[in-house]
Length: 430
Image 1 (cartoon, rainbow, N blue to C red):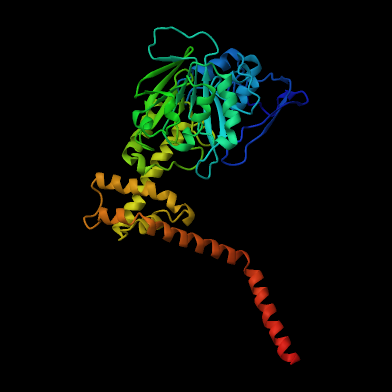
Image 2: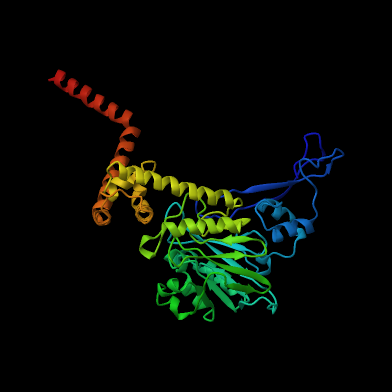
């Protein structure tokens, strides 16, 4: 709790060093925890309260809204000696993982994803006991992993260790088909060939041959998955792709969102796999109505204030679409003209990645009948090819060259002066 400056405290004693997992999206934050004895006689009810470990556990596992009282990861770690044994310790995992809320295991693994990220989060659940044969109907298993997308050369051993540690009646939940979410499937098959893939039917159709060696069950919005006594609800989440799915851990109200959200910045939608801006905005609003307490993206760190992030996503998309429409109204007709103007706040090196979202924004504007009559969709589509990427490459190279020249401007000036002085000296000697 927060303590008033007049609180009487004993000397601080070092307790533990908490090492945050490397999520591959920037420097990890490590924390040193200290302990002290406190004697507070004054009323501190206006700034906090003392809580028991039982109350802390109930707030971690049973809070339903973002506005409910909560404990963050560090506070949860401080209480952890008084909680039931963690999933990480029950599985005897030696690697550095994040377990928040308790029972929701997140392990970032090296993957073939796009910058600024370098890892995909593997999420794991385990019953560690008898299956609950309660009244809730749904798919029942003993363990579940989400998006095993690790690169085989870099993270295969870690994925193998997790799969071998989990009970064999395993589900593999795939949020979508992209390689950085499915590349570890052969490793899962090697360690547990009886594991069952749960994914949207469109995702299943796009899986590779090795992945299809595993049994696949198509899933749909509203289905329930039960792991031991833990209930997980399937949420349809189209937008990033047409078969994109999310998963809600009902007890802790934690939402696993795949690539709909990312740890920093905004998600790149896949226009080649049914990505759709209207669907993306609708899914974002669905997530807002769900009001999750925690969001776990598959790239980057979790978000403890998801409603703010989700509302920010809508504002960002609406602002970007307004910029694109403004560019079109001012005469932009080609992909390069639209992207270079609407994404002028981003370096040219990222314009190729922005093209997919720009295409979907233009499609959305057309669907909403906001495009001017003189704008030609066929012409715009034709301009999205090789010529666009060549012009982006030229702009990026020019930008880097300008930066290099500015960086070494003094050196260039000194070199020119040296050459001039040398020339004068040689001429004078002659």
